[in-house]
Length: 171
Image (cartoon, rainbow, N blue to C red; front, side):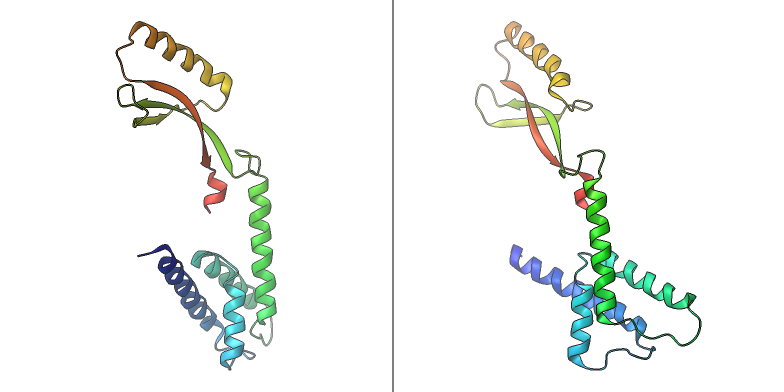
């Protein structure tokens, strides 16, 4: 499956999920009755990137209706869109406040890379756990260079830095 086909499939799944979640409001006055109105509601929910986020938003809106007294009406598409944007903004604020990456979305990692023989073809690479700064990587580099001076026949190895996506961006 191509990336384009996968993207279309994911979009269709999100759309179907949004329609299913909207049906939870079907018993309320004000529920959309035309295709155009339903499309507006679905588009409002598709602001959220994942099925889980859509379900959570609808759960909260349903719970809000349960706490009200008297006749409840179906939220408007504008209400849903506003709530979705508030959720997205809240998530972005949390990402910017990430203690691990300081909001950049990326972490610096250090790796020991082993090449095949003396070539530049990577045979293996492993993350140096607990090494997150150049100061912490330097002792590993010095040990590696000392080892290579004593054992010149071994595979070529080096310590290198790389970027890794922070957990705050995976959600």
